[in-house]
Image (cartoon, rainbow, N blue to C red; front, side, top):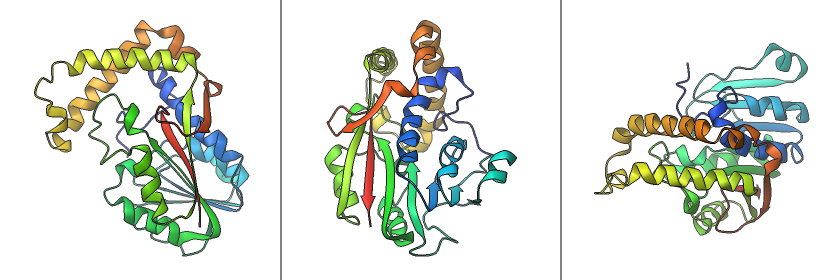
Length: 257
């Protein structure tokens, strides 16, 4: 059973609405691009399957935890799910996938090069990788659940090792979203000001995970209580995918084999 950390966004928690809608805009964009056999790496709570399976001929889902897939979605779509730690992508044949969708995953992968090698291996010639991950330049603190985050040049450079046909765009929020971002930044600063020795960047990740998760939950709930109208009002339409700049929230990458 999956542990519900602050890293597994859920539409069931009202305090997570702003981040949930930020994740959803990537799925809405992917829905306009995919077809054929689709592999999603990192299904999480499964809302991506609901959004994308209907646009595929076959949908293969992979996650290290069990992902709930409703009987209704299973009935109407050809869906296969594998519970596994990745990489490698076991049970997935080379040159068999039209689209790989992996949103907010690569930052959690120890060997990101092997991860991309495996994605390249399973894609058909002409197949596409759709990938999102946070922009390090816009992160408010160190996230110990992330192995690493990428600056724009770093994102492009690692993808270009494997994919020569590459487009990197950004996920952006409108004024309402960025007002929330500013309030979040202010709130996080009030917490991190006590870290006078910069321990968040010195201590091992495993030590920081639990306190980070507790503080992250506390912070989101506090932001919800103090800014309820903003948190409740944000919709997927408040986000957009546009040309890359340093102040995007996430990268939206399209890489073709």
